Image (cartoon, rainbow, N blue to C red; front, top):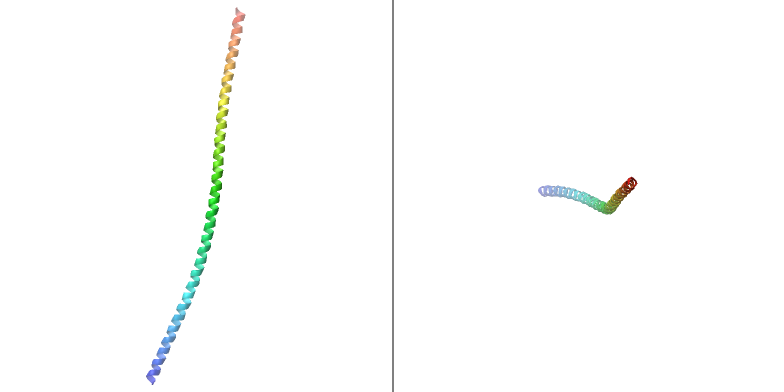
Length: 116
């Protein structure tokens, strides 16, 4: 009987040890599950923030592209105006030179007539 009681005591002690281990494992599992949940929430929040930032950057890039295109168009228009002004200036200069030549020839002709 004493042997049975000892065996029962050892079995009870072993069972309690196993219960403590199981309880410890359960607590650790719960802790890990909570940590995993927190990490998932963080990942979801970071993903949402990242997606929002990507959307904002895309919008900014679209605006910048439109501004660049507008600036390029304005620059091309300015170049066209400069070309037109340069052509008009050259034409005006030619006209001025022609007028000066005609005046000089007219003066020389009058001069020659006076001498005759």
